Amino acid sequence: MKKKQIRLTIPAVFLAAILLIFFGFFYWKEHKTLIIDQNPAVYTYEDLVSDTDILKSRYASVFSADSLGETVDGRQILHFVIGDKEASRKILINGGIHAREYITCQLVMKQTVSFLEHLVSGDSYGDTPYEELLRDTAIHVICMVNPDGISISQLGLDGVQTDAVRENLSQIAQLDGASLADSTYLNRWKANANGVDLNRNFDALWNSYADPAGHPSSDHYKGTAPGCEIESAALIQLTLQQQFTRTISYHTQGDVIYWYFGQEGDLYDQTLSFANTIAATTGYPLDADYQSLDPAGYKDWAIQNQGIPSLTIEVGLQDSPVPAEQFATIWAENQFVWEETLKIR
Image 1: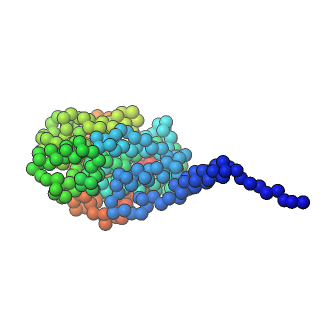
Image 2 (image 1 turned 90 degrees about the vertical axis):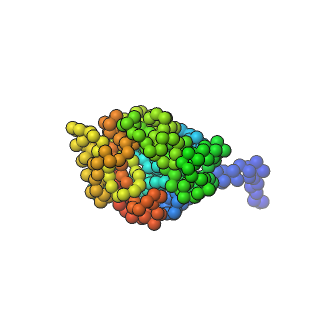
Image 3 (image 1 turned 90 degrees about the horizontal axis):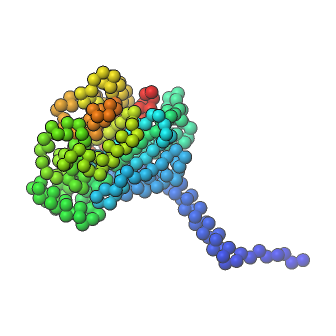
């Protein structure tokens, strides 16, 4: 008796190949090494996009990502949510609002990945399970508030995607008395692609702030009105929608925590307590002398206009951009900032 031979038709073979490729792609994505885990010397917008795509697949049950808007040079302001979007307690962590302070994007992304890994592994922070830390809580994360400016600071003109922005930068350089051929000028870029310092673009003593530029510039220009830029407007809108319980904004440099903006009463007490908690885990001192600093920052607005206990954490030493060699120290100091923040109820 002859054995029957099983023959796949051409369509069946084709279908099998398609399924193999399909499932192979998702397996590859699930196990692909994140760029953030390779300790890159410079963490770019493209790296962030690539890693975000992997995180959406790897941690789909607890992580989501969307865009708060598209910048003038065609990049997305990526926004993550970890936990229950409908939670009563909502916390915001953001970095990279100042272009040359891009090491903060790497820090916030590494915090994101670390927290997700602990969460899905069923780990505990001390005696508290990560699942309990996240109970009735949503963590909103913007690793790179200013992707256009960061691309300019990291890559110079190679980081510019459109002719319109390239021409705009040329005009800004003329106003600054500088040259786009000067790599130091672009490396020290602090503003967005419109030449607005995004952390001087919030309605917190904005009117009284006489910025030293007075025109679109690589640094200090406060813009034509509070929230006039896509990036700052996105932060404002998100904050108004979510009514955050606490916010942390990462900047460089100085290893210091700014927490005060003239608040009084219960808000004063809550913010100071929050600052002391984070100071204990980072080892950074507190600084309450807000009058010696430029106003109109996000933290200032969140405290003054929204009544949210909010901190600015300055990481790194020397000058910005902070050298990549400092990242290991910055990470060690800030590794558990999220966990300590979540312990506060």
